Image (cartoon, rainbow, N blue to C red; front, side, top):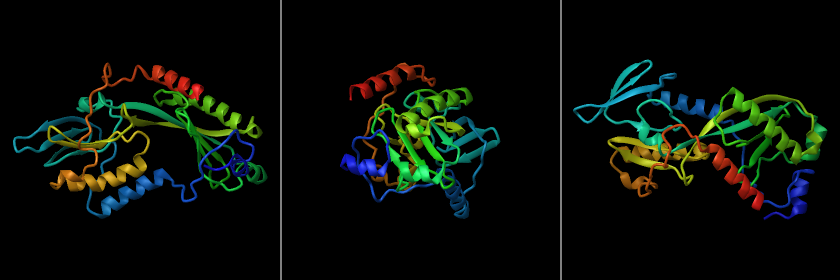
Length: 273
C-alpha cells in the first residue's frame, strides 16, 4: 500500500485516500493491438473475414462443421468460438451463460499542461477499487480519458450518451478543477461477463470455445489463443479452466433484463464500503 501523502503527490487533489502503486504497469492502444494481431495472423496464413456474422452452424457426417455467414459458407474440421456478446446466431448455449455489460468512456478536450502537471504529475494509469469503478489516464494529446461501467446497461448511442453524463459527474467529483471542461468524445462497448467473472474454455458438442473474460480479455485471450491451439491439437490438460463447471444463468436467454438490479446491488455494496 502507498501512504496517502504519496497518493496525493501522485494524483494532485483527487479524492483518493490510499492505494497501490504498480511501477511496472504500462499503457496500450487496444484497437491498434487488435489490428496488429490480425496482421500477424494473416502473415502466418490465416484468412480474416470481417462483417460476417454466423447465422447457422451444422455438424457434418465426418464430424466437422458447415458454417453459414452473411458472406457465404465454409466447412471446417474444427471450430473455435473466441468471442462473447453474440446475441444472434446458433450460440444459445453460450448466451445463457454470459451477460453482455456496457463499458463506457469519455475523452475531454485537450487540457492545459500546467493543469495536468498539477493533477497528474507522473502521467500514470489509474483505476479505482469499487465494484462500479473508474479507470483513467492522460492521452498523448493531453486529453483525459475517463471510463467505467457508469451504468449496468447495454451500449448503444442513447445509452452511451446517458453514461457519458454519469462519467462526467464522477470525473468532476474526483477532480473539481475539471468542472465544466469540454467533452469531445463519448463511446461505449460490450464486455462479456460470466456469473463468477472467471473465463471459460473447453469443448461443447465438438465446438471448442474460450470466452467470458469479464473485462480482462486483452491479456488473457492472447494467452488462451496459444493454449487452445494446444488443446485442439490433442492436449486438453493445457486448459486451466477445464474443470470449472459452467451452469446457465437462471432466467437468462440472451437479453439481460436484470442488469439494473445487478447495478443497484453493486452500488449498495460500494456505499457500504
